[in-house]
Amino acid sequence: MFDQIGGLPVHVLVIHFAVVFVPLLAVGAIVYGVVPSLRPRIGWAVFLLAIIGPVCTFVAKESGEKLYNRLIAQGFKGPSKVLLDKHMGYGGQTFWFTLALGVATLAMVLLTLRKAGSLPRVADIGLAVIVVALAAISSYYVYRTGDAGAHVVWGSQG
Image 1: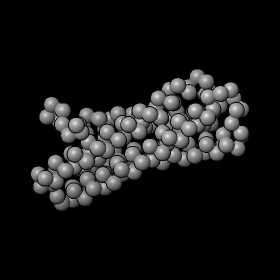
Image 2 (image 1 turned 45 degrees about the vertical axis):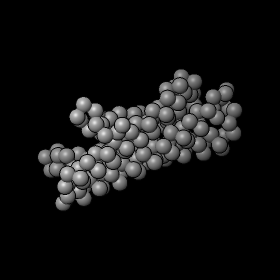
Image 3 (image 1 turned 30 degrees about the vertical axis):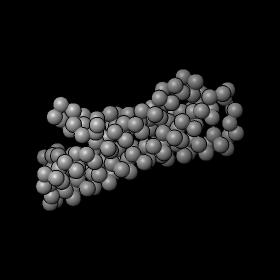
């Protein structure tokens, strides 16, 4: 399922979904957490992004593992393999932090669906701080994963 589509590795077809949707989730979650007055307008989009972002990173991670196994079976080794291993490590971290961001964002949205002020202020601020931190970490790992992947593919040319 995560190996190939039409002879192309699924990974190269799906990675851009993660590259787009994780930063969108991060920005949406930060705005939702920090600007309560916008919550009624963006809540549905942030809710959807909290599901789509982790799903995209999961598919990218799983398809990357299939591609990795295929490359290793074909004899991929040396300095490029070291870079590929680094890329794989960052990809795993991206998935876990994005999953945590998605869960925290879903919790925040679901707990604040009711009228403004329904959540105690300290809990609202605490959730916002957690979401902002997870958004920053997830964004960092998306960048590091993509950068490491680009070095595997393009080397010093990119």
